Image (cartoon, helix red, strand yellow):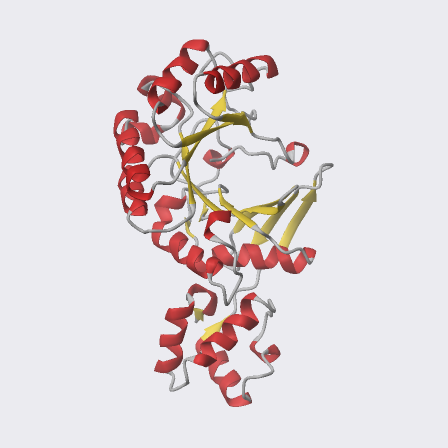
Length: 334
């Protein structure tokens, strides 16, 4: 049966017309799903009983069960959701001064094999559908009563390896007749799948693009991120410059600092050279040790030295605030 949350509003209107219904009925259902956050067609009280029965025959409403919920001392919450096929995904809710941010997964498992990332140990099963991505937001809002204002695609999986479903999820999330979360409040991260960066540049979306860079030489980056063997730093930078030229939007570069690996002054100098002249921001991440992982966190002193060198040389850099470390929800996957 088709998951009704897999359809953006325009697609849902076409489905309704195909069922012999007026297209405005799709807008009513969209409101019930994303504003009222209902979990059954029976709750859609302004629809006729006949239409509700028809919808039950044609569609399901993807509704997650919470398998496990952990809360950090800093208020961060990590959810393990049953995706209704015997698999599970993680979703993290974080509180900031500007509102609540949710980190969503885009796949069950991940193919990328980044050596510092906890997702590396999770075998890839499949990509999530658009509705399964969006349901993470709805499930957390139902559980907490909180209105989420920011979305980051930085959970389990590589968003650009699930490109079409991720972008369709963004269209659903962004729709003013639904969740109405502004595109500028949505960030999509990629480990560097170069062809999709070009595609995304041509989408004319206002979302923030985050690039997981993490190293300044091909040797170091390939050792950390196997994707670099397919798309090296030179190709990646070329795609990033195209994106900036095409969209006039800033890129956020993620850089996880690992002790005795990518934290030296020479690394900082090479990073400045790589990014010079680009509209960008560097998000420095204190790397988290993972089971069987060889990388460990840089010292606070070295992290601040690295940040200050970048800022002193014209590259805006900040250190990501660590949230949820005590429940293994701190950023380990970008």
